Image (cartoon, rainbow, N blue to C red; front, side, top):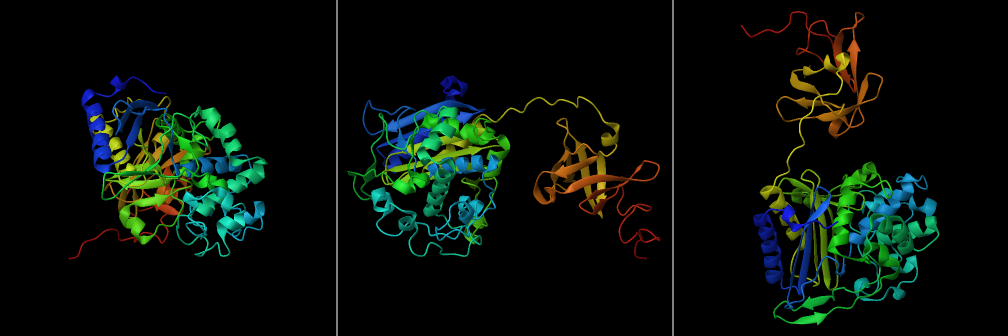
Length: 461
């Protein structure tokens, strides 16, 4: 996976190193490691450490906390793709008797199941999982704090339930399923439930003194699917590429795209902050750039994995301190540095292999009432409808093979576009989900619902 560092320009590499050096110094963390992927490959790795001569490399394990949730979500989507469950199924259908069974699988994945954020009892991140041997110990007497499906409320117990669901349907432990179905196929050989040497130790740094305190590393037991894993920058870089491109041995490109699609109603503050949540993945508007991935934390560790689909660039940042540096900010900056210093070079324009006259006839300007639109025919076989003003509803449409097209995004996602022809075969108008698009604004003679005033356009005399 790792490729020569020369694939990035010297100035870019220095800017990346400078960013993590500032983060390690100002964040006062014992160590910080980072990696950048571009075009499906790791193109840079950097590290800083407080110990001279002992800089961790891309194979040193750190605890990754809630990035574990994305791995668990992949397992659940695999079950869906195999037909063993539907995301709309209530949990009760597959895992009865939890007390939270009215929440659907999709709602648990998107943290909209109404569950509490944490498990009751002793602080679960700093106590052994043996204190919570049963789901009832994880959920408590009143698992639901909010109406199911109404709001996004991040829930660690929700992912405990998803991990138990995986175990129930597979008939074996969550970690064994994860290793066989995800880690081994993707070559993530340094990702595991328990630390494997070489690995970093977790530390707390005193907020008002340059002093450190070791943090405990507990086995989370049933809570493992929410935050147990240890991993490396090399492995998480591979995982980020998978989440961007898919891999048919694990999940298809369409299924990982579904994970990256917002699935939770946003809180008011989330709308202002530009954040959303998909199916096991966080989405962040970063100065106009959409970043997708997940963050994680456990006592002694902070982690983030983020990527930009439009730039085909991702970044991983791992540290071994409880607080101090902000890995999400660092990862976002690493993506920005590469994207701005070395912008993606577009693939060459290529024309259509074959031109269908019936489709080409539809290209050009159309009017929805008085709103001007353009329909373009692309080399990939899709047609693209967009407003000429640059603002408003737009979508790509996929051909269905029968002279109709289906919308792929936005307001027109799933809607049917078809050309309505006159008896002589010429096009009268386009019908898009019952909306009529004509060649001229309210074209005379076209089949416009409500009709067109016979006196036509006029001024005020």
